[in-house]
Image (cartoon, rainbow, N blue to C red; front, side, top):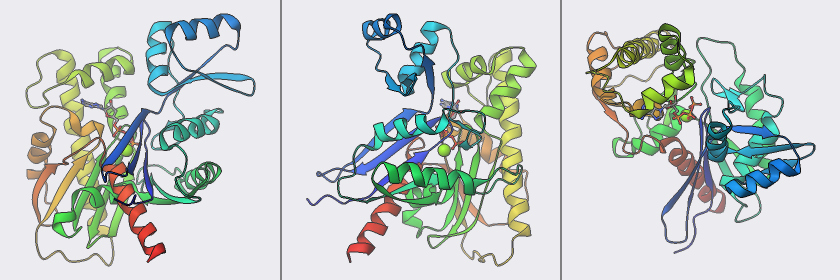
Amino acid sequence: MAIQHGKGLDVGTCNLVAAEQNDKGEIELRPKRNVFIDVPIDAYTKNMLTRLNVPYVVQGKKMYVLGDHAFELANVLNKNTRRPMKDGLISPKEQDALPVMKLLIGSILGQPRVPNEVCFYSVPGDPVDSDLSVAYHRDLFDAVLKSLGYKPSHILEGHAVTFAELEEEDFTGIGVSCGGGMFNICVAYKSMPALSFSTSRSGDWVDNNVANVLGIKPAKAALIKEKGVDLMKPKTREEDAIAIYYRNLIKYNLSSICERFRAAENMPSFTEPVSMVFTGGTSMAGNFIELVRAVFKELDFPIPVKECRMAKDPFNATAKGALVAAQLETSSQTA
Ligand SMILES: Nc1ncnc2c1ncn2[C@@H]1O[C@H](COP(=O)(O)OP(=O)(O)OP(=O)(O)O)[C@@H](O)[C@H]1O
Ligand SMILES: [Mg+2]
């Protein structure tokens, strides 16, 4: 089978995922945590890392441990990991963000298989509740991908979700990615994005609020949350707090869709009810979709919705949708 060129890349606040099709026609996915730590450049540290079997990279006067290894090493050293991104965008507070992102992305994307292979990467929709600039972020990532030998293009994260999950419905419906830093929402009509935006309330927001009311660190709150909480039947005080903020989070985001949709001009009129599909790490909590359905019932939603459902592959939908976009672009170039 001929290889279909083009690659997809989900650039997320917490996780990066690269997607490509191999020569057997299968989709290969390569995830990596979007974290790093810096370690001293000295013989002692290098020996320790070699002993622990932890790979490191030296760049200029700095030495970094990246991705999942950074996460594990941080636990051993009792240090905090650093994040190159915050709230869906490159972090303004992290001086090392850009060189680190280039190393992380290069390690999962690999080399382009043809010169200037097309790579579609996900970007957030314009945030409704902050004035962060997506344009600056996009320019930076264009430059990173070019320097790795790719021809970059971007796709809105919510739009990528509709590409990955709504094929059987003629790419018409609502894609919602519930990530670490943001909710990304896209209403698509026959594959075109009719309305897309993001909010800066998602998993991190739950962690920070739960940490606040319980007097614990956000990382600890995240740990309890990720261990598996039944949002409809919380069992402990911690789980109670998580379920309360989850309900609040879902209400806030679904209400934002209602408001934005009512205010938008030139919206397509949906004659048939559409599906609303949920993806992303934050949607992986126990009974998340049940809670969504309960909150949805309380709202006067402006679009006819036939079902709220989980994505088939919630963790990888954005990367897979970006891959679909890259392959479409590549085949239109060679057609
Ligand atoms: N089993 C789980 N239950 C609940 N939350 C989870 C679970 N696993 C991961 N998460 C949360 O999912 C979030 C990360 O999700 P994801 O990888 O989709 O985000 P991202 O794409 O990196 O971020 P963004 O799209 O906001 O930039 C984190 O807040 C994490 O705590
Ligand atoms: Mg994401």
